[in-house]
Image (cartoon, rainbow, N blue to C red; front, top):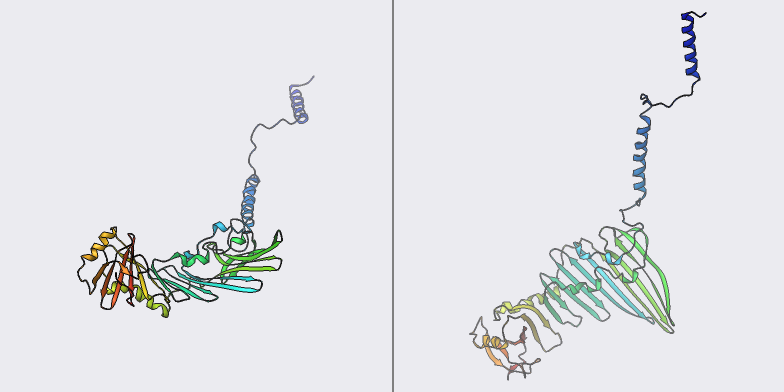
Length: 374
């Protein structure tokens, strides 16, 4: 017989054996955290923080300014106006060689943004045309010595510089060649390797290069050459444009031999030439080999031709000027002789013919007294 004590011991041993031999059941309770638990979460963000900056850095060029596209591409329509610079001098040289005979033209243009002043010296095979824009007036003298004076800055000064394209239109297919300085300015260099095309019996080759400022995207230098041949005919045409003295000019002065033009522009005001109220001087022409008459142009008030003539018919002697004739004028180069009445007015030895066409007034300073009443 088993005693109660021995029975209890046997029961306890069986229970322990059953527990040891039974398969492990899934855990349903959350295990207690251990010292190694935080290692997983902290490793992941530390790896991501390292990778992200490395990927960003390698996606950009490692030398020079950041570019939207790398390598840079030449986009002609995106070029900037060089007149945004404080000052510059730009030179445009054109050469046209036909069967060995060279014709050359060089324009040198200077510019200061504030206060505005500019010049253009146009040198060609037989002479030199010069234009200076200073103090709100533009003074031009041709190679033959003719004068042209006009109010305003005269944007035609920059026509040869082809702003903003900088004479790069033929270089649209130029490819990026590297980053270089052009006259100390960081630039992108583009090159158009020689490209040959044939149309019938005409062969043409085009090549060139350009430099663009990295900061500002304006043309620093451009050059292209186009060679055409057909039988015994050969033509080489090339254009070079180069920018210099960037933000370095401090003053543009009219040449000494052109200062007389400044004085001439002030003449009507200094002589006190009487004009209808609202008239304003805006231009003057002097032909060196003309008839010796200076032509001054004035804007005119909104009055009829009869009102213009009546103004002078009723004008008393003013500032030394006296009206000597209202009517037709003999030998007049325009239509005062036949179709229109004009005004003759004099001050001492100075004689002026006033011609009004309903839009503007022309005052002809007749220094040699060519004209007379008709």
